[in-house]
Amino acid sequence: MGEATSERDTDAITARQFEEAPGTGDWRALARGAAALFRTRSLGEGAVLVERVRVLADGANHHPDVDLRPDGVVVRVVSHDVGGLSERDVALARDLSATAAELGLTPDPAAVQDVELTVDATDREQVMPFWGAVLGHRRDDENLLDPHGRWPGVRFQQMDSPRPLRNRLHLDVFVPHDQRAARVDAALAAGGRVTTEEFVPRWWTLADAEDNEVDVEAWEGFDEDLPDHLVAPDTFRAADGVDDWRVLQGASAYYATGGFDEGVELVARAARIAEEVGAPLFADLRYAGVTLRVGPPEDGWIDADRLVVAQRAQAAARELGLRADPSVLRDVQLTFDALDIPAVQRFWAAALGYATREGTDLYDPLLRGPSVFIQQMDSPREQRNRIHVDVFVPADVADARVAAAVAAGGRVVRDEAPYRRTVADPEGNEVDITVRPGRSEAQGD
Image (tube, rainbow, N blue to C red):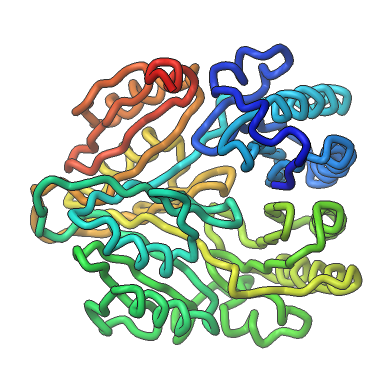
């Protein structure tokens, strides 16, 4: 996010102060700044809002993160120079809400959230480089953050004694087929090891020094039969005009930009292309680049229309003189091993506010958090996982979210209401349902 430089370190505010400021009622403070969702009736309507965001952000010299979706636009404000929220964020949020209201858009503050991860480790310094390498994250104090603001941050906390059994939760990191070798090599150089080559080249299973696992996945050796209307990964890659795109969950392309204005222009053009074709498009706009994705979260597959969108969007990007950088691309998925897959799926749908896909999958309807896959486990593993999920929700949603998770088979194992409640699923996998506003004041920060 681009930052003004004349007010550095002078206007920081807490999450509570942000939410109590006049004109911020559409917004909710989360893990990383504050976010608002404005529902739209079309991609074109969303593109109009994105273009209006450009005018306000350029005028303020303060640029938000913007996620364009087929039915809405999510805007996130944060001031990196103060490590959180500032009065500049209040001013921009207020102006953005007023602009959305002028356009007749409806805010949906209950739908925003941030999903993060926590790794318990006996030696944090030993395992952190591995996770930074395999995820493509950068270090920020004791945490790892996605430099492109798309995927979960990872926090590391001290574990008092070893828990040697295998986790019931591991990560899947989808990378482009031509980037997979470099990603695996980087993870190995950072202290990882290969635990099995059984599934190569579809995925490589790696582990950190404390045996927390991740599958690095790429669409190579694809041998599944697809319905005639869908395009297989190899067929997509062989098509004309998609050299910038890579098949992950759906197909994605990343374009580095020279600033916010170039990114807005690309997003607006791509949105109008998708609307004309009649296919969904997902665009993540950041100050230094844009990620485009075709392939809906409901199934992630590509059909002929989505191929056309990719081809025409690539042409638009090149007309703007933008350069693709496939090394930035990745998708993140959480995989749970479960004895009772339906029970675990019901819980995580409730705890994360996700939608179900077939009998084993979950996905974020806004395509902003990691997807979830649940696979069969042969025998119980009673040990507490070394990895757990943190979901930051609006303060006015937290009680209902906890109640929904409990009603779906969970149990509260740690209650630090109103700021955090740890809820375990029927098999002991944990999630912290967390809120930001008020925590700084309660901790005396």
